[in-house]
Amino acid sequence: MSINEIYLLWSESAAISAVIWAVLLVTLTYLARNPMHKMIQAVAALIQHAFKQASTSLSEAEKRLTQRNTEVLIAEGQEASEHEIEREFERIHNIVEKDLAEYPTLHRKINDVVTQMDEDYKHSADVPPEAPGWAKAVDAVAKITTSKNDPMVGDILDSIHGSMEKNHEKTLEEYRKASRERHMLLQKMQPAWRGMNKDLKQVDQDVNALLERIKVVDRHMESYEKIIHETDTAKKTLSSSSLTQFFVAGFVLAIAIGGAMINFNLIARPMQEMVGGSSTMMGYKVANIAALVIILVEVAMGLFLMESLRITRLFPVIGAMKDSMRIRMVFITFAILLMLASVEAGLAYMREILSQDDAALRASLLDGAAQAANASDLSDRWITTAAQMGMGFILPFALVFVAIPLESFIHAARTVLGMAAVTVLRSLSFTFELSANSAHYLGQMLVSVYDLLIFIPLWIELKIKGAQPQAKKKGASGFNPLDTQTMEVSS
Image (cartoon, rainbow, N blue to C red):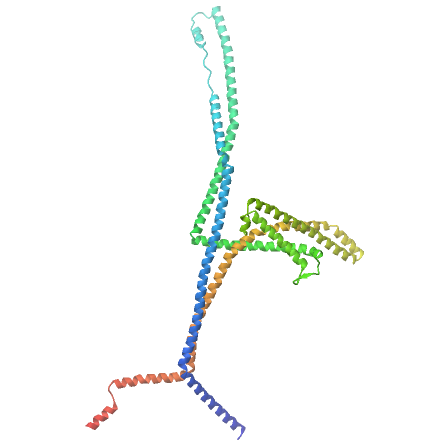
């Protein structure tokens, strides 16, 4: 046999074997069709049920967490609103106690001034002088019909004229004196008027300030009622406020961390000379750990100082102390901060001395011209020395105010992290729900793919099942060849 004949024989046998194996596999697959369908459907149902249970559990956890976030948000908003209302009532109390407490005294003062002004006004009334009693006598003399050339009558008239002029001048002088007294009274009334006007303006300002505070309290009370009733508007407002506080406080804390890093670099170098630059602890330099501890102690003292001043409320124990103990704690923490700030200023000065020593060492290795240039540079080092000492003294006090954004960040983080957790749970619930539906339809697809592999036996089965109803239909119509034959034989 040639090689071609052997190859053709082997190819024909391989093809026949492949066909035989294909027929066997299709036959076996067809025979295992129902068990395989049940197994695929059972596995798909199991996966679907597992994902469904996980989605339901996550949905329940999301609801509980949402309820918890709402309770925390309402509690935070209620506490903040109560704090604002309490502060407004304290301001109203201060206004009433400081400004309006003297109102009864001011009222009596105004009444006294008004009474005195009324009396002065009555005394300052312009009363015309009464006509003198001799006016009737002059009238009677004027009616005398005797001759005007009579010397006796002329003497009498001259005497009367002189008397009248004297009386007129006397009366005019008395009138002028009374007018001066009236003008003096009116002049005395002017400061009283101005004082009373000033007092009334002050009372008006105090009352207007009190009314403005009352309006602010009304707005806070309205917001407080919305928070108590857990309205949607209050929830949205509190959520947006929490997000704003979270990002603003986080930004301020980032700035504070930058200041702390500058402070750390300012004192790390001189700390190496104090505690040793080569010694380490848990893989870190002891000098860096010491510098970090000093900064953390400053931050802690700042927190205690703010708590003692009741600016923050991170530690209720400090806020519940007696006033005398709390005031002592204020002085103690401030004294510790002052000492730490002085220590940092000294370390900054020491750092500058070390840098000058390094510069002098470098200059000693250079030529003369470079040494003169470095000497001229060293003459102006007092500016950097003063700047570093000032930074070393001020930065510890600046870190005191970290307590305010830290409190806001902690309170806002509870709400923001709760919202983030709700979002994560909702996403996972949706993912598991989608996976459950995908598992269901994937099982149906695998069943269809399984049937696609054995479509030839299924087609034959379908044809057989289609032929059986037609045979039954023909039998039901009454046509039977055996019946015709029996009829012929009987005939």
